[in-house]
Length: 333
Ligand SMILES: Nc1nc2c(c(=O)[nH]1)N[C@H]1C(S)=C(S)[C@@H](COP(=O)(O)O)O[C@H]1N2
Ligand SMILES: [Mo]
Image (tube, rainbow, N blue to C red; front, side, top):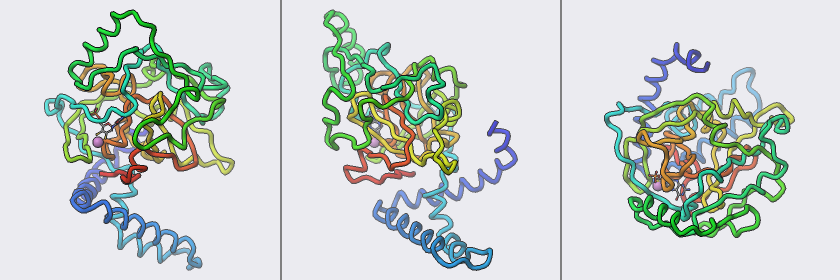
């Protein structure tokens, strides 16, 4: 297990984390523009090193550039740095923010995860020649915006006996929210796996108490439970490229395609990145993203998609809802 591999380095990692956190705290106080500039500068330095003529065995320009930007690059690029965790007694009652892709209550039984880009996908019993043909079903009435009345709205609409509204990917209109439709949404006819919640829950359960930060300026200590995305990726590994490397990105979207997020594969393999099924010791509510959401404690809240319908491994940088509206793609803390 990767746990035992990491153990001998735990102290190093702690010391490293302290540094990175101190550095990233500074960053958050500065503007995004600064972070963006720094990222560009670091990228520039990297290209320079790669394209400069080889200097014996020592890529000197690269080493200097990296020493100069050591803390900065680490804060931006070292996705292995661990986020601090807290005692469970510090966990707060989760507040609600962001309803894009969640305007109707999804009927839990109608949920499947459309997983695309898996190695040897046809060998899985969950293989489907067109995952976009999966039909999600919704409660007929629109839920009230008050999160506390979500349960009421749900039981009320249950009582109407109306036929649930059905929505088929590729047939219904997608991307109706402010950022518009996703350029990375799956084309009709995309093969992949259709996973049930039972498939997800077969993976080892993992709990985590971390700080959850929204870019609007609030934060909360949240008790999460679910499975590690690293374990999920091990169980359903991405197809390798012809050169043997993994694809670089992961794309996720809500079942209706309205909210969508792109990630580096490395962020998804971070040991604290979870596919979440519970918050505060309770199964996820609809508005918190039932039945499955993401928690990536090294990222701001807007990268933590609620109600995941699609996960696609891809080598093309995925479209991203809030990046389209002007926010940083990395969204690192
Ligand atoms: N589907 C979906 N996921 C989403 C959002 C959203 O609008 N729709 N908002 C994001 C933002 S900006 C934040 S801060 C968190 C809020 O999560 P919470 O409601 O559980 O507190 O969800 C993130 N994930
Ligand atoms: Mo947010």
